[in-house]
Image (cartoon, rainbow, N blue to C red; front, side, top):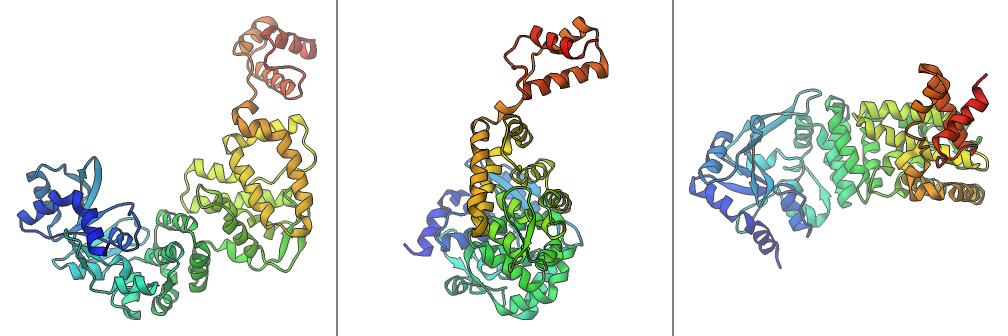
Length: 458
């Protein structure tokens, strides 16, 4: 089946929408990433539309033909509607789109020509549109670039690349993400322009940085994207801490607290090895990316872990991570505890990890896989000991939590007359006694009261 037939079939559910705009004298096209994905034989995540109707006119068309009007980004030319209970966006042709420093919202200039709208898009493979019958409008040879497996800006020139990256410097990060996602080569003129425009990335809001880097880290050919960002000088501008890692050749010799030793490979190369070994799903690649930050500054991993957590926390704050995601990453960054695990130590460690314990365990496999072969067997043995102790908590993280009798506070207060901080101290000691297996959570409250009386009452 050719592209036209595939796209016509994909656009069949939108026949009434096309007809509504045609009836009112306006053009309507599917545009951008959905067309690219159809050509690549993929199912697009979203289908977006573009039109010569101004936002107010788009609202009128939708309302007149019984479609729901959702002004999701009216000030930027975008109106949404619902089709089969799913939201779709319709955006007015633009001839210019640019961002002010640090803003997440574009300044737009509307146009009347589809070709002009496509010309201001980031890459030729995203600068294609499709009509209702599946005909592809491709004035900048996006189809040819897909066949050639190359990423180029529309009009294929260094000055045009400077202009496109200047309008929105985030497009340089987007190019890296597409490079990692598709495995295409970057056009030399686009690379040259990105190298010359690299500093402009600092004008982009950090929330937009995060979205693109997050997508990059989930891409199947991640290494090519990061390599391109390093080559153009963009990566060290947004994440300068990693430049220091490239200057230090040092490696850990276990998964636990231990001395670091000199080696031939930089910490940056080791960090990337962890990133590439981590699964693309979830956030373990973020964990891997941050995991060796402290090793550049501390020779003992006990202090390296503290430094890593501090630096990672500052970087995540800069990238506008949510509080929950920040806490998760720092938790999973923990090294394997040193020494053989006691029951108490294993339970306390499981409590500290909470529901991130399975991901922490998965990350130990990542760390083990890239550990120097000379140390790997000993590290695997240490991990196996902890696995045995932590096994109940891998299966049920909540089993680690200490659950005291619900009426303990009231019973202690009544029986011993303790209040406030003294009562809190007694309860804390009961928790410690459970961890030491002096008490059991199954014991009745009277046993807890008697234990406190025996140990603390004068």
